[in-house]
Image 1 (cartoon, helix red, strand yellow):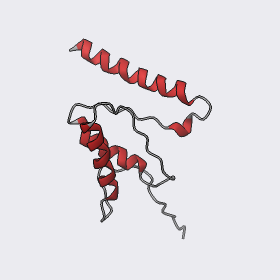
Image 2: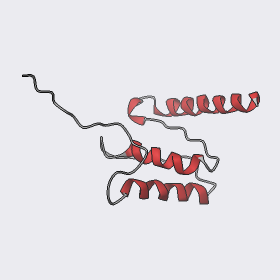
Image 3: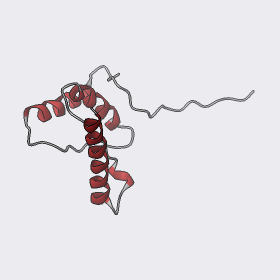
Length: 105
């Protein structure tokens, strides 16, 4: 008989499944800063692999998109030597998409 190994799923989720709701609390705290301080435009989230960064971003996105914000995500780990140009390019692509959508309306 062949045994199948089951591994932990590393996909982000849209809700905080932990009893303490720590991911949700972090997302709500970030949302509060973004919503109350218009000078804040960029946030960074750091953490170990599997710590829930993507889950926090997913929950945060739910909190602020409904209030008119647009979220651009950027994985800095993919761009070690070209971090700044890659970030600028990611933002530029998102802005072009947004501007294109507004022009079509």
